[in-house]
Length: 269
Image 1 (tube, rainbow, N blue to C red):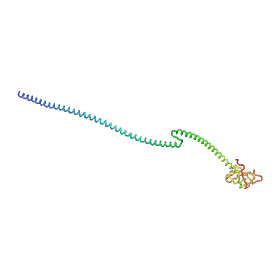
Image 2 (spheres, rainbow, N blue to C red):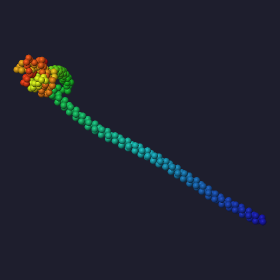
Image 3 (cartoon, rainbow, N blue to C red):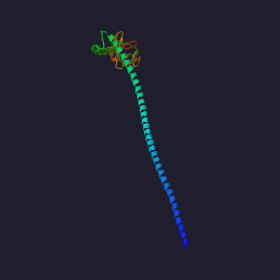
């Protein structure tokens, strides 16, 4: 019984030793793996650090490259803008130069005209003596202007006088026409074409066309001798009916056809 126990104890001790050894071997292997792993990790970390450093350096280079590219892009844009501005300025300068050339041509033309005018003025007039010549011309112009104003004033006065004269002539003309009319009326003679003793009127061969009016008093003549008067009562264009003023008849006289009538009161002049 004890022998069995010893055997079991020995087996147990042997097993324990075996397991202990086995574990120690495994532990040693694990330790080695751990150490190897640590070493590997250190190498990996070192490689990673180197790689990180390289990445950082490349990143820095890339950033610098981007900055350089951006700066270059900005510089190119600025150069393009400057080029466009210079092109525009050049075009403007060309335009200005063309305008200046045209102005110069006009100035040259004006100068040629001035020289021609100076030559026409005579007397050796030059640009230096031109102000004095201009002053002389201005003085002459003022004198002529004053003379012109004087002539205009005289002309205006003459026109007014002429207008007054024309008005007077018109007035005298009208007066002469009126006088001629009155004279013609004073010399008017008409013939009695009919007589009605019963009703006391006569018919005269003249009317309103001869300027007879109801206020006109007519003398009746026979052989140049006044024998009575008649007063118009009805006037037509070519004949007049007049009433006989019996109290104006000469003693024993009777009006008859063929007697002549004239104005009793001649028109005044």
